[in-house]
Length: 424
Ligand SMILES: Cc1ncc(C[n+]2csc(CCOP(=O)(O)OP(=O)(O)O)c2C)c(N)n1
Ligand SMILES: [Mg+2]
Image 1: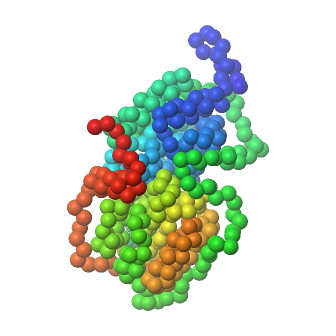
Image 2: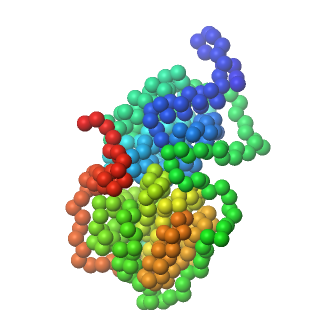
Image 3: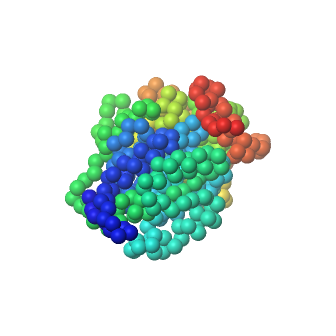
């Protein structure tokens, strides 16, 4: 607690009390999932989120992942928010543009306003924050009075849903109750909270220990380029093995997969790397539904920090497959770091996936996928493929908006739950 003078009176400021009001406000606004990355000034909000049983808190390693996670949650009927510092907001701009704005996905952004007036040390990022929000067409407001937070959070959630866009609230030191407060958590580790997850399945992974059901095969098969299968052959092997799984993929993988297993439950991502984060948001929101991410090496390398986030949440219903062709094929086939030896399965294993394996052939892939479906455990499977895409497949004529509605209606019909909310 600290004393603060304002307009001639003395007020008692308690960051924990402010955090409580903000988190209560989020719950009151109907938010069900909050992805976050800390700034010292929002730590009490994060601690309050950790203790909150009415929503799920997803700690991030990089803010852009949070856009994918919130988007996945929204597509499964959950309201998501993203808590971050304004430097983190800048980290999230591509995801906000090519996922949230392009698919017209509502999302509440809670941005700590470092470099706000009177806030030392962050003047540069402070100066960029509002112009960038305006450039993105994201409506926002600067929050200074915590007593207004519950109402404004509710109103902004409505604004997000009605405008079908992200909206932002800039959290100042005043609204967080940290102006003039000496914040120091040195030497005081902040373990994750008890984190009850009422609306979601799957407990968070809680440690590095491995169990008997775990699978680790982190040595890539030794094959010449010609011995490797094509991605299309691999997808063919999966086409009737995945049942009614929801899938998330992008680019050429999406086109091939849609040709082999056409379904309104096939989602096409647009932000390089975010298919895995979208898959996480879906998997956490629909814990009884199988979700399969069909990733590329370049895409995965772009969002490597998404791997520990996924492993930490540990959704048992998520299967993550990566087709590693050693290049950025869609953008001219220049080499990715995997061509020089970077090992994606080893990375997944190191990130905390307890089942992570390389397979060599489409048959192995099919078998391993079958096992992972039985194991009911988060699984990562890598397969080296040779570059090359299936020719002659039709271009999709479905844009992101139609795709979004089709996907949401599909989830509604197959899960029997309301997904698309609003009063039209
Ligand atoms: C942030 C960003 N940088 C670059 C691109 C251009 N780009 C589009 S697809 C792609 C390659 C993706 O590589 P990978 O995931 O390995 O799939 P592949 O094309 O090899 O099947 C790149 C770099 C992009 N879309 N977004
Ligand atoms: Mg590639």
